Length: 153
Image (cartoon, rainbow, N blue to C red):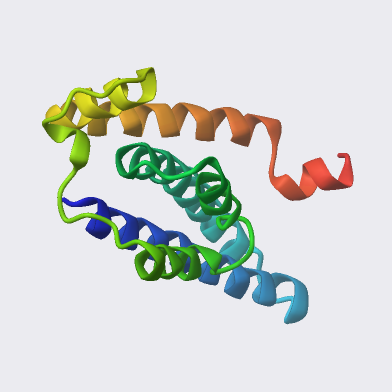
């Protein structure tokens, strides 16, 4: 899977889960029907949010994004549906490659070396990424939903 395809899919998944969460919020807070949508979509969105952030960092390292572009990418995961807009902006500005730059090249810095190793062993890297995202996700769930953190509960 190329950087372009990966980033397009991950951005769309994050936006889709945002949409599901917004629909769940309408059901819970506006229509007062059920909170099931928020419960389920909130978990899905939280996981997709973390996957998008990880994908942003991996693609950014491989494609040599500036710190500003990395920051914009990470921040785009916060407002609803902004990840797709950011992904499209990236494609218009400087299209993502169809191949991974670091798959065959030895990177100079620690981040580039780590991404290069991951790209050479995608199955292992996928498992490690899934475990990493899951551990962070479980830790964040133990802290509580973002609404509880904001409300100070």
